[in-house]
Image (cartoon, rainbow, N blue to C red; front, side):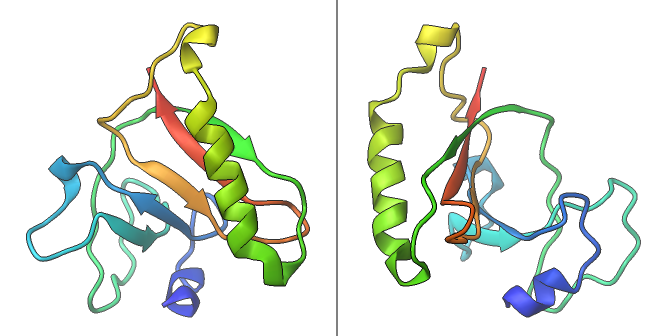
Length: 120
């Protein structure tokens, strides 16, 4: 699937994984999905088994862990997610936005694990 996603011209330059809020989940599909961000007027081919959804503009806080050895990606994810659970966005005047998806970038050891959480 990742190869299919990387073959689609993306605005962000790389595929992402998302945890979708319930309002975006079609019956029989998953909360956890993979995709790419494309232009609003995208006219390219949509691969079989994929859907197009439109998400609203949203603000995010990016969390980035330390670089890790590629074989330790599971521990890197768990470490950052534990730190995220302790984070209080109200310290910056925000609260978590449950109406928009949580975003996960591919865990790449040299840049560290990255997640983006929506805020309002």
